[in-house]
Length: 267
Image (cartoon, rainbow, N blue to C red; front, side, top):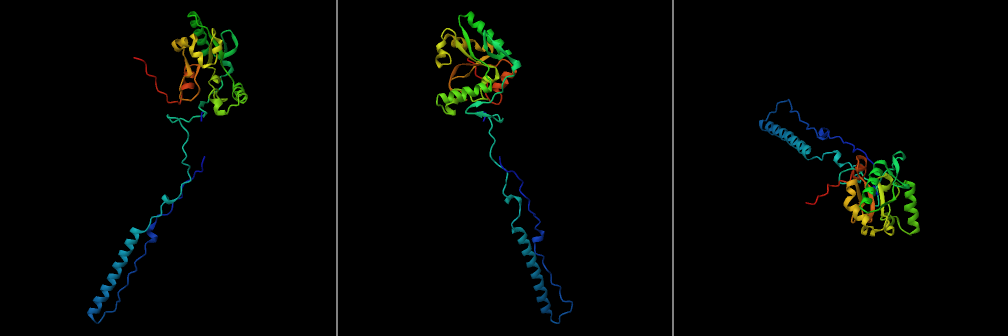
């Protein structure tokens, strides 16, 4: 998902056209007086005409001579554009998935009674509050998967993809490549309905009571669905995949450099 040339400066050429202008050579009139007046007049007129002609020719040459400028030098600087988002920031994506860092071990804690599933402290606290609130409404929210390391994601992406005979592009529609999963952050969690486990990690999870409760209440606990239908990243619809966006770090991690606009509220 989050998605060289040679560079050089053109060499300037000299533009001193003064050296290219021919110098007019003036004839010096003969100091010896001429006997015949008409001859002197013809001689003087001839010399003057020659000088004027030379000056005019030099001026025309100066005006019409081609200028030698650096504009004719080929540029060696690459003009290939750098991949960017609409906001101008560079993006590192693979098959529609953005890159995410691993949460530090010191920030991870287990959630609910499931010892094998961990989330960041802030996200875990809000998730447990959400589970408690749902249970009071007769809904059983069950965590299925939380934090996953890059190594865990490699097996999930490449290992399971090979078992199912899926190309990387096909696999990416269902699972993020390693290094590009929201689960690396410790803020994402896959949720199931404890009353209907057969819907775990299935699109028909959106028919369950748990999903309907999440749709109506998850925002109160700073959780949102990551991949709704027709999402901009092109990832398959995952009604079970939710992420925490309740503090500055999580908000920046999921929304920075995406150029997303505020959603319109219903009137």
